[in-house]
Image (cartoon, rainbow, N blue to C red; front, side):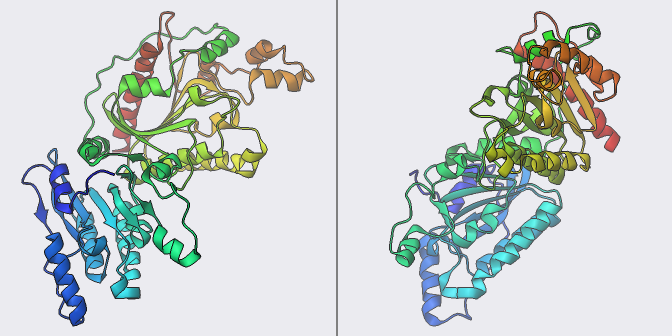
Length: 478
């Protein structure tokens, strides 16, 4: 376990020197019992704060931000009514002033000394946070050790991006309370930051020393204006007579450019997000906040390198995609989807996990989004798994990319009664090529591919076109 940071130490770490300005009014404890007043006074002397939270504003690399920081040294960071009022007030002020909000938690939960009146204030804090999000303003949370109970079950779990410190105990019910109530210990290793990240509950585990860099990455996408594009757009025309089967084989070849290459060679300040934030994580998709050739956006892409017969793209991957769509819509950022899949999972698990429903919900979400949306058909575009990420306002395809209702082998088996040997022939007849998609209006632009393209070169060419098209969409939206 890393050292315990105080609230003020953490704010000093993250904020620009001398920029912190407190928003906290004095706390009136005169209405409490003598014993409780004495406990509050001892807590204040021990912690060096007048309550379990401090709030205010500052700058982070010159950007104004609002902050809410738990102080564990004050009665184990527990939240009473005064602390809850302070948090809700700070959130509302951040909303009124149009500021991103960074919160750090370290708490045993709501304050038992104040009982139900304190407990129900978690609703008021949550209401304020959701109004902040509804205003299109970013909310980031850093979960520290420990974050438990009502804090984790309210304002600790409502962020756009949630990370935790290494080894942090994070959970709903404290393990000691669980053991006292149930007569047996809580399973070890469950309520840890690392396990929650693996399970898709939080986005990452980050030491406090790295928190400034992470916040900077997030705000660079969520707040900063676009940069001028740096990558040249590729000119020329795709070959109208190229073989569909040759294109399919190219997209299946090792070393073909994928979503990772787009982010590696054309993205900057990229912050990977993990899972649905609802306890599900499928490694076959990547969700990231990034600046694609200088243009801030949310990217969700199918990772071909992680899709195998043993690990196909399941319904959880599409639920992660819908999280990316929600983030883009709520934060007013363009959405970029990257299609590169041999097909969605076909199994009992997938059927019972609502694979068809998730495809439908992705399509429905994309067709109703109000932010600029762009889809990239980068490689294989097979079946409903590909269709789920297709219906953007603008669709760009790499020249060898393709789209079909089934793998060509599957189409051959259907038409030729179990014979997969006509796959090449079927791919020609089904008009799967990027140039076919361009001709029928499914695709709006095809990026030519060169014989000497490596993954980096093709990724940069595709990203340059995407960036230019996104800027046009943003400008048209006004």
